[in-house]
Length: 79
Image (spheres, rainbow, N blue to C red):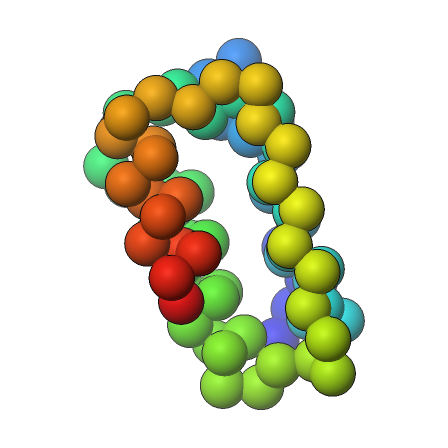
């Protein structure tokens, strides 16, 4: 499993997924496209669940989150 670092845009957050146990989502989450980053994020988390680090730290620092992305974030957190 590899580290994933996705840089932010004006509509999407910075996402850092590190197999050492750090999951960080920071910025604005207002993009309403139904593909791309959320798919990559959920795929990585599904793989991470199979081989987790000893401890996992989840950092969420969002300045804005719309209702569509609230559903995405909630489904990710449930995993």
